[in-house]
Image (cartoon, rainbow, N blue to C red; front, side, top):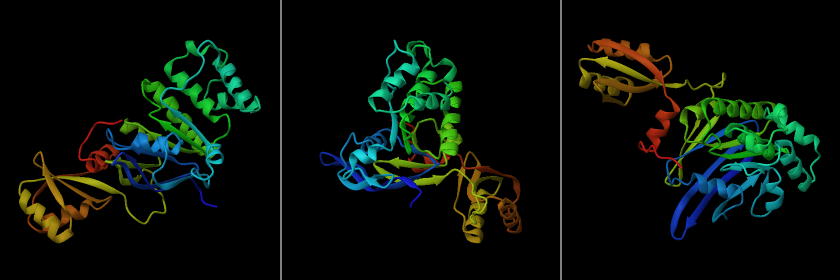
Amino acid sequence: MSDSILEIKNVSKYYGKTKVVDNISFDVKKGEIFGFLGPNGAGKTTTIKMILGLLSIDEGNIKINGYDIKKDFEKAMEYIGGIVENPDMYGYMSAVDNLKLFAKIRNINYSEVYKALELVGLQKSMNQKISKYSLGMKQRAGLALSLLHSPKILILDEPTNGLDPVGIKDLRDILKKLAKEQDTAILVSSHILSEMELMCDQVAVIDKGKIVKIESLTQNENEAEPKEVQCVIKVKQQDKAINVLKEKLNKQAKIKDEKIYVTVNKGEISNIVKTLALNDVDVEYANENEHTLEDLFFDVTKGDKKDE
């Protein structure tokens, strides 16, 4: 059986004649935190709504734990937990009573309520009214609610919105724990690039309805392919250096702020410097900086900083 809990294959969505999601495909595996990034209007929220069954799929198919949501909708939805926008709970009731009410409706044993509250770190404050909770605690309570039925995948749309740094870190730690210890697959969208970099195993960037890049953020020890880094070089003969890099090493470089930027494999910088020196280019300095998620995002979305 495949490790993929969520499978999206050639999915498209139209609003009238406008194609807002254009033939996208990606998988989320069990135990994986998969980030979903995109500028404003890119199709991110539309995709999430199709996964949750809130919008119909015009082309392609989506499977949850092997069940096609077009053919086996109810069965597929059994395996999904999700938070879209702020979780809705009764403020005059305690967290534990909110969860017990939901458990009773879904015919879930109350033991799962206490298990979920412990998972999100609310066992000590479970008897407090939701109205007394901070935003971060409300978010964790909503997460506990979505975990009651032991879903195989969590769908979280901008879960860190409005949270302070402590709340963001708490949520990140909980999600990483769920992925690692419970083998839960997690799809999370966010506009906080630095947080996605700390949290996610992979990210997909969607722009103008298309997946433009899927990037792994974890380094496998057995990977044969070296990690790419950005090399920053300062020389006096910039044009000559650009030509040497292109002709001798097949590297495409660019000049910005009187420095040369070129993408190389990690550990390759010494060879870059050596090649330039052998071709009579004096190198003042050369440093390597790993590509950040922000670099990737702005590269593939042409610098659009807006997000849904």
